[in-house]
Length: 562
Image (cartoon, rainbow, N blue to C red):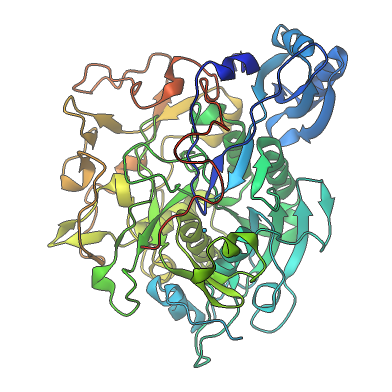
C-alpha cells in the first residue's frame, strides 16, 4: 500500500459540501482544528499491524483514542509536528484526517412491503428469520415491544454496543430515531390489524444493535470502524450473519483506500452478508456513496409505490435513489427495494421525527423515504434466505437475491438501466424457492487479495464519447444509459424480462496503474470529470465540510416522500 496522507491545511484550499444522503448518511462536521504547535487534530493512522501503528503514535507522543484492528490502524490526536513525523515514517502506510459522519429518514398501522417483496408468503411457511442474527450499525435502537420481542414474545436483542464510548449494555438506546425506524423495517413483530401478517420483513430475527452516531445523528469514521470491528470480533458469539449499513457518504478515494470500506470488506471476508444503502443523491449517474461503492457488498436503491399500496403497476424508481456506475466501473446498485412511504417505528420524542411531525401516523409510527429503508428490506430478505439455507456464503446470498430479482419492465424491455435498478426489485420468496443460480456474484474479484494482496479491481462499465454509459461486451437497451433522468410513470416489477447475459456486469477485472478502459470509444476515459479526488488522495480534495453552502450538511435535509 502506498503512503498517502491528508494535510489539514490542504482542506481549506477549496470550499465544498458533502451532500447528506438523508435517511442514509453523509459526511459532515466542523473543520479540522488549526495545527499550531500546541493544538491537535484527530487522524486515522494505518500501518501493517495495529501494534506498529500504536508504537509509531506513541513514539511521536500522540494520544490514541481508538484501536481499529479491523483495518490495522489507530485513531489518534496529533499535533502538526507529530503529524509531520508520522508522515515521514517508513512504518506508516497512510495518515488520514478522521472525518465526521452523520446519519441521514396503539397498534402499528399495517405495512405493505412484506407482501410486496414476498416475505409475507414465507412467513406463512414458517420462514420468519428465526435463528439468524442481524446487526444494525446506526444510531441505536429503541427497545419498544415490536422491536425487542419476536413473534413468540421472547426478548431478542442479544447485545447493544456503543462504539462512540466503547461500552456495552442495554442503556445504549436510540436518542435520534433513525436506527429504530430502520430496525423496525427489518424485524418488527407487530401484526396487521386483522392479525394475519407481520409488519417486519423478518419478525423473528435476533438483533445486535451498534450505535456509531449520537443524538444529533453525528459520528466519526473511527466510531463507525470501531463498530464494524466489534461486529466482526463478536459475530460467532451472537450468531451474526447479516450487517445492515443504512448510511452513505460521498466517495473521496477509490473504494479500496477508504477506511470504512476496508472495514466493510473485512466484514465480508469474515463471512458476514453486508447490506448497504446506495445513497440519496440520485438520480444522476456516478452518485453511489460509501460503503455502497464496495463491489462485494449488496448495495440497495429505492423504488416507491406512488402512495397506492394495492397497485403494483404504478411503482417507480425513486428520483433520490443514487445510481451507478462507480468510479471503478462497477454496476451499482445491485438491487432495489421499497423505499418510499415506509411505515416504521419511531418514538414521538425522537428528534428526527419531530423535525417533520406531520409524518407520524401514531405516537410511535412514522413514515419516511430513503435508501436506508430499502437497505433494511433487503437485510430482512437476506435473513429469511439464510434461515432457509443456513450454509450459504455471502457471495451465494448476493447471487440468489440478484438472480431472483424482478426488473421494472415497460412493454417487454427494461424500464430502467442496470445502472439505476441493478438486477431489479428484491423478491424474497423467489430467492428461497425459484432459483438454482450460483456463481453469479463477485466473479473475478477476490476480497482477500483486495484487502491483503494489493490487488484491486474494476468493472465493465465505460462511457461513450457522447457521455452515455454502457457495459463493455454487452448489448441491449438495459445496458445503456445516456443521462440521469428517470422515465416517467409507473411500471410493473415482474419477471417478464430476463437479463440475457447472465449478470456478466458483476464480473471484475484487475485494476492496474493507468488502467484506461482500453475498449472505450473515448480513448482512455479516466472518469476524471466526475470526481474531484482524481488527481490525488486528499480525502476531500479541499472540501470544507462545514461550509455554509446552499444545501446544509445536516440531518435536517429532507428527502420528500415519493
